[in-house]
Length: 231
Image (cartoon, rainbow, N blue to C red; front, side, top):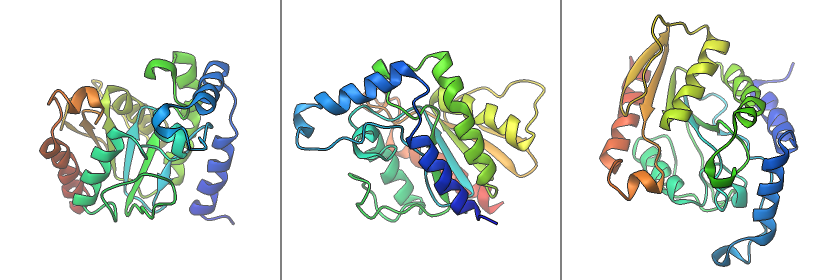
């Protein structure tokens, strides 16, 4: 019988071959073909980007989508972009990552007790997926969450990551609530016995450049995750 790690690897292969969304396929491939000047010598990934991390993870981080010149270039979510710079530094400080930087998929980064996934697996134009594109990608996140059977803490990056984590927890873990949990930075909601959701502002440049999100604020999110996992 296949192990969860083997099933995650099979799912990864399925995700990277997906062509369900014509608009996203056209955009990701155009970006990979035209490139940008600072990465002109790169061979872009230009395909859907699967989740990655520890198959035995108890922490699952849910973001929005790969960056056009980040994950769409490197083939790994949050790798090679400014948002990832912030995220991996915070994960390293919290003990979930073995190094504070990630520039390409073979750079030695390893996540411990942590898995990172996206709500949409292809880089979308203007970073705005459509409702149909979210719906097409959602089963991938649901299957990942089912295979990551030890997950106890979800961190939703931004309102979209938060809502997608919430929706997926309801489908796969029997999470229920009388009033829908509200998004906010640092908010904590218990979704089911032994399952928690923590909200965080997304480490996008829009938030980090303006000071809406600071490094101590992001550190606080993962300190909360550590506390919940220890409880």
